Length: 225
Image 1: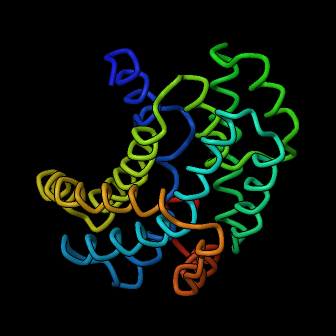
Image 2 (image 1 turned 180 degrees about the horizontal axis):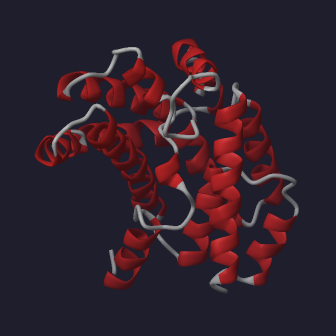
């Protein structure tokens, strides 16, 4: 990858990107509260399972959205955007993706790096979830799709690891060891997401949905989801 595009990808996947990712645990806070995640190994098992769920639905939809933005295919973008929003089966998961999607799309628009055709497509979306905004940003920045998908997955995993470091808690070295050990799984999930056919996509994760609903009423919590 050209150095310029690599730098753009690093910025897009950075935890300092001002979209509020650090305020969400994606169900992990509930898992920690209930004792399902309590040390490095259980954290690795949780994040690996989360990646498998993402690899069956969110990642392949993000992949399709990146291709659709590249073709300027507004119908496909609307279709996959609506599919993703409809699949957010708890109120906090839906609020999370809409808030982060809005923040990222607004950031890219405010930076004035998206051409008018991209901006026009985005204006036709009634709501913008995070995968749609990420695909929009990927196209605006000119980042190769394969690299962008890896960057998206790494960013999601890094956020989960940071939650574990702060809330389990894990030490910094343990957190970095956990993150390093997940690299091969991230690569495998990225390849898997690119190969799925439309009728193979699935967001079936009832346990995670239940944890999210319980988190909405959790007495003491730090994260918004």
